[in-house]
Image 1 (cartoon, rainbow, N blue to C red):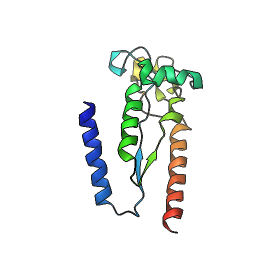
Image 2 (tube, rainbow, N blue to C red):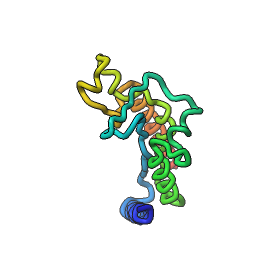
Image 3 (spheres, one colour):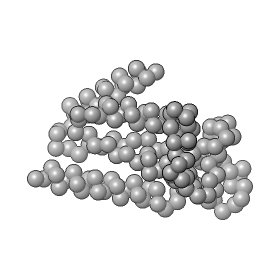
Length: 152
């Protein structure tokens, strides 16, 4: 499967490089992490954290060598970074900062203790102020820097 993914990434990067002029700002956003605990979304896993993870918890959760819950995102990010090396496509790496925010998913903030039982689990969306706002702030700065750099 890894070979297939590498081939897809190689072809996508090649196409982007050929199809878009050099002066075009090009971005590739890396993966948004999942924070399932106790199984995947379809196996009664949940994201019921009410505070951010600590720095020391991140590798336990996400490092591939620990068989972490989000190991695929880190593995995929490495392949993407390799595929983009030597290109003018900017990497927008939001993964690491987002890994901390296990508390920022909507499931526990719907106003009821049994929100997951009523509305279902939703670990892939980010509702709390902070995470998506930070993503936008970072993207804005990268765009601004890119525009200043290309206009010189």
